[in-house]
Length: 201
Image 1: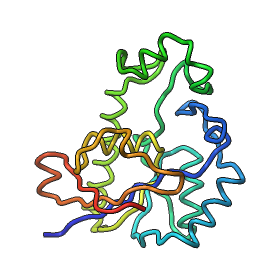
Image 2: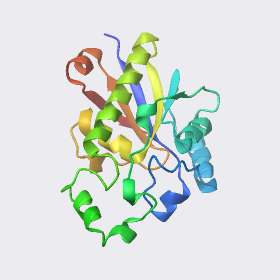
Image 3: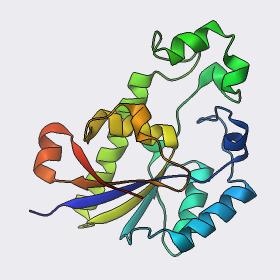
């Protein structure tokens, strides 16, 4: 039976990453110079998978990462993979928010969404839709190996929702420019939506 490989890669470093700020779908930051340099060094030292198709979140930092790691490939944007909407927490650090009651409720799981932001439930649903869009496109076009440029939190939530081995979202963290390789077995995927993580990038 034909299987499909998808490599989820976290975008490179931004100034907000350095400052520890929540930057979501409302702030389309570019990579910082340090982030570009780090990705170029990683490209020389990491054996990134050779792929037939390249997908990305629509956000600039993800598309720029695609351009650095796979400079000769066209980028297919998947809108459903856009970063989380942090609502009123956008642009703020955990340290700035630690006295905010809504923030402590959100981080402890007592509420599902930041004020004026996206619910975790809706976030996971659209990420799964984005993954399904990619899988269907690969099957339709006979593509068996693809890379996807995503956001760190998006990778964590997506894998916690549908990947084996089963792990909590915090156990699916990845550094900038790193990620996970997935194996898609069509019969398993179509029956249960399950994907298998088989390697670390």
